[in-house]
Length: 107
Image (cartoon, rainbow, N blue to C red; front, side, top):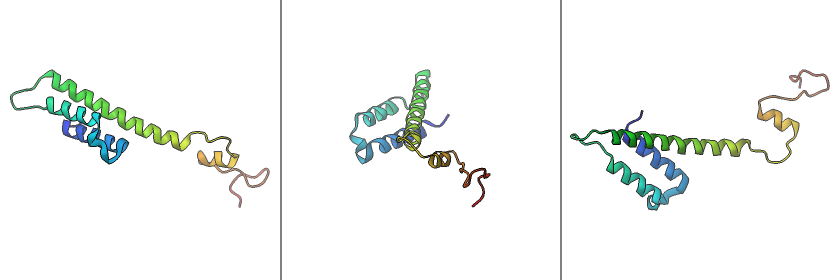
């Protein structure tokens, strides 16, 4: 598992991607920073609650990253009405034959 600082930076990067340059004024930013400050490890304190908070933050980072990747793929491949056979074949990396009975590689 990544270090807590790396997870915190990753969450803040995802918030910045979602909300733009004004992400520092958001409630999500304030909540994330408060939670990381509250659960940081000191020399005399090492407890289970800190580990649970680290795991929850890592899970939240994974959720934010996966959601962003899902939306990017959805926007790329989502149906935009009826497509031509050539366009559909190009989406999956194929080419249609250029002449009837052809094998597809003729020019």
